[in-house]
Image 1 (tube, rainbow, N blue to C red):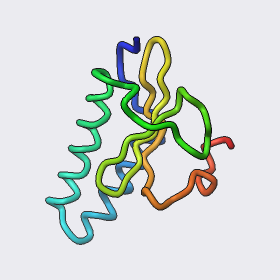
Image 2: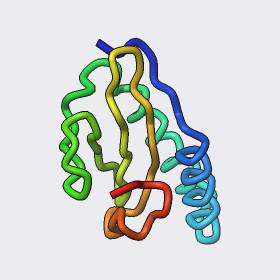
Image 3: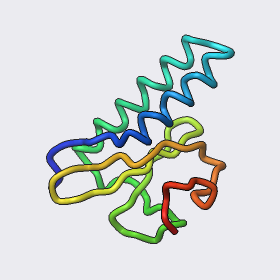
Image 4: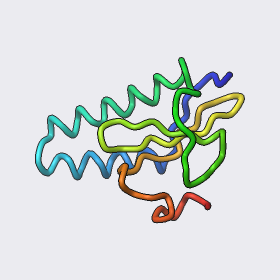
Length: 101
């Protein structure tokens, strides 16, 4: 069972971009979304398998959870849960350079 959650730099950059976009309209909502994303990531330690397999990748170790309109994509290994990225729910992974398909 994974013991820690590790956030990739890409996932942290994603969250920064999301916060900047939402903050154009509401700093309060931007802070709320960021807080909920980090809470969701940390909650994966309790039940990492609760997410669904990312359809575009078809890898049983790469799962996703949804929060608001965003996909939190993570990989489960024996030692950690690695948060790979956070993207808008309508965006396909084919449009994200860092995800190999």
